[in-house]
Length: 115
Length: 117
Image (tube, rainbow over all chains, first blue to last red; front, top):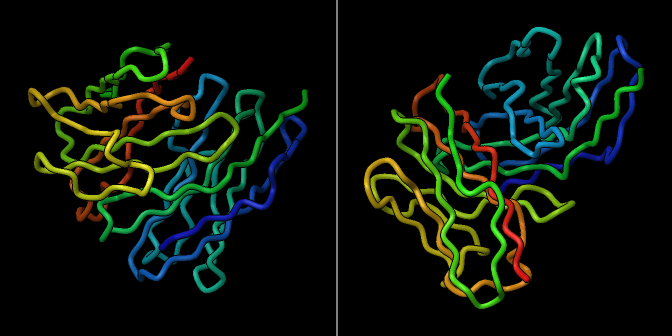
């Protein structure tokens, strides 16, 4: 079984500053994928960034980057130059190839961006 | 940009009634999923569907639930006799075959908010 833990229920950041959201996970598989999804007030789930566990290089996507520590099973999301539109609930998730891409989500972190 | 679409966006139903939630996945995707999110809680996996059959289901997906791909484009979730605790946001998602190295993310629809009264 997979588990995902997000220990920060809420975070806040000033506009233009940088914030890091934490995520730890547990899985018995050697091949798996990690994701951060954003859920704005509209409640649609939007993929922010993904990381393949077999890749050592941390994924980046514009202002979003991850710090993937495989041995520690840690997968944090860094948002640089925060914008008001980044305010949302952020979910960390893990999937395994052997489970047909079934996603296991964390509890979520509510990010507030202050002007 | 292709997207997953779900209808209706909001459904209100009486307890004990049957409800069908509809989804149109992205056209070249082969795996389909339903997730639910009770208000204030995490998103939970319900079921995955591939090659016209269920490939995996969670303990939540009991005999009250069923899924179907009736016509090659729609993917439906039926709740046979709704209970108050079925009130939640239901998300449909789709992905290409998962054993492709670069295409394992699931694309989500905008969700259907189900309210059971």
